Amino acid sequence: MATMDVKEIVKQAAQQEDKAHKFYTDALKFVKDAAARIWIKELADEELKHKKMLQKLDVSKIKQFKPAKIQDLHITEYLVDKDVHEIKDFQDVLIVAMKKEQKSYNFYVSMAKSSDNPEMKNLCKILAQEELKHKHDLELYYDDNVYQWD
Ligand SMILES: [Fe+2]
Ligand SMILES: [Fe+2]
Image (cartoon, rainbow, N blue to C red):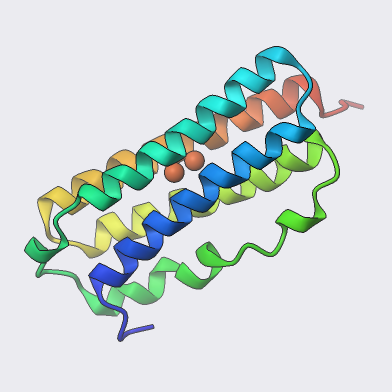
């Protein structure tokens, strides 16, 4: 993990955003409600936008990246997609998506902390905020439409 360089991490993060895009696109087959479909499509689009933002980042300018802190990234956890095949319905989509968004948020917070490069710090902060918003929206939707209060 310590040998992972910043270029590789940014590349993998971009790939992960691509997977998130695919996840939401594939999840549409479980979504029947018209408004929910529009929302899930928006989520898919935003993940694709994240991928492009990461790809635009000029990693050659990034010199100050503290490798000691890479251990805090939980990057392995972030990269593992073990739960997607268990999806049966829209409720599962929401649960898996909330977990994924939480991991993405944690990842970008750690990335922002690990880099002294202002451009990268900024990008990671923006991405962290957007993933947090995704998670928050998913939680609100879950609470309103799925969760049964006793
Ligand atoms: Fe994202
Ligand atoms: Fe997201």
